[in-house]
Structure formats: structure tokens, C-alpha cells
Image (cartoon, rainbow, N blue to C red; front, side):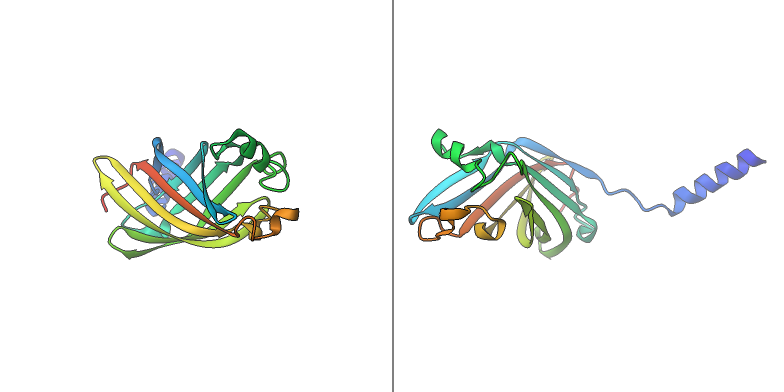
Amino acid sequence: MKTYLAISLLALGAAFAAPPVCAQQLVGAGSEIAFTSKQMGVPVDGKFRKFDAKVAFDPKKPEAASIGFTVDLASVSLGAAETEAEIVKPEWFDTKKFPQATFQSTAVKATGAGKYEVAGKLTIKGTAQNVVVPVALAQSGGTTTATGSFVLKRLAFRIGDGDWKDTSMVADDVQVRFKLALTGVGAL
């Protein structure tokens, strides 16, 4: 009788449990996080070589999504070894103290066919800021590609302390672009 009661309670609990949101897998080869800043008015392009994403997204229930990113700041690539050696120093990313930048979604809302607005907290150098990022999804075969861009204010995150706060040398606005290839996303 006790075994039957235990099995009945487990079955009842399972019946009322929320269905799990399927997690997607990031395909590194088709993904990129890049940025463009301006130094003395000249565009400077860069990207991050190491990052990861934890995505649980159902196109039929975007409001239930959970999207998180971790970016290895020391993996920055600017095309010049001397610039890359400088950007990891305390005035810029301070990667010894703050090795990663993170993003965690707080809300996802559909804004049109294959278009979403993702709100969340972006944390760089221990400073968290609310951001809203427009994201477009496209599907081909079993891969869903999420693309988007937003402007980051570098001084809000203390990127470029000291003499580098002068925005006539390095602009405050940094254009961030991403392309994330994911598997496991349901049909849009």
C-alpha cells in the first residue's frame, strides 16, 4: 500500500510539474561577437574569440525564455598585439580582476515575425546595466541564427578609466554586433 501511495504521489507531482523549456546548443563555428569603437574618429573593429551562451527558448512562448552569455574578455582580438596587450589592463577591461562580461535576460518579447526584444542585465568590470537588445531569428535546416546589435556606453562600465575618459580620443559609443548559431530551436 505504501509503494502504491508513493507511486501515485510521484505521478500526481509529475502531472502538475511545469514542462521543461528545451535548451539550445551554441554552434561556435557559425557564431561571432564583434564590436566597433572609434579612436580619434577612426573606426576600430574587434571581436571576442571565446564566449558561451546558455539559451532556453521556445518561439511559441518567448516570455518564458532564459538567455545568458559569458564573454572571456581576455580573448579580445583587435588585430594588433600591442593594442590587445593594453586593453586587458586595469584602465580598460582589467581582466585579472574581471575576466568575464556576462549578460542574463530578464524578459523576452516578440515584436514581429522572427523578431524579438531581449531585456536583461549586462555586467562588465563589476558594473551592471540594464540593456534592451533587438534580435532577429532566421532558420535554415536545423540551425537558427540570432543576429542583432546595440550601442554600449563604455564609460558606464568604466572601460577606459583615467586619461582614457576623454571621449575626443576614444568615443563613448561602442557598436556591439552578434551572430549566434543555435541548434535545437523549434520552428518559428
